[in-house]
Image (cartoon, rainbow, N blue to C red; front, side, top):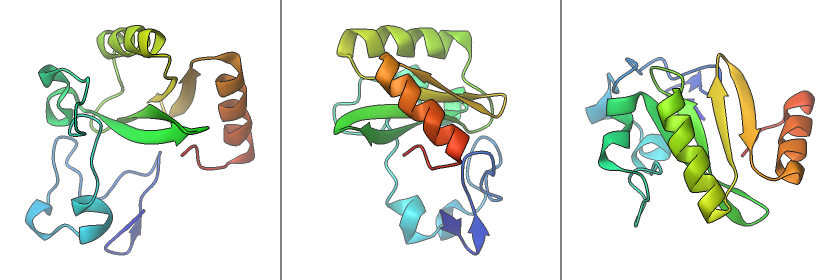
Length: 130
């Protein structure tokens, strides 16, 4: 993503993020900021109220893998903790939807072996994960 001339990607957060909110919220660009819908805001979101990004410091980014909707848990102030990862693992297993998460600057994949293998290969090649 490019926000007002600043490249933003996993590992290089938006310079306008305070870690809890957007410092230019009223003047944020249409794309990607105003058009972005996090997993917590998606229609019929399974995420509980307490998982609102400004409350937990993690954004559930909606992505797809082989046509299957997945989440990529992206730090927005902190890495996902055991509580968030535990809930997401349980939900992922029940719904049969793999997920990605970033912790300590490293990406991890949870789900079937073919998902994990494909994500590790993309990471090794330096490719975008979604």
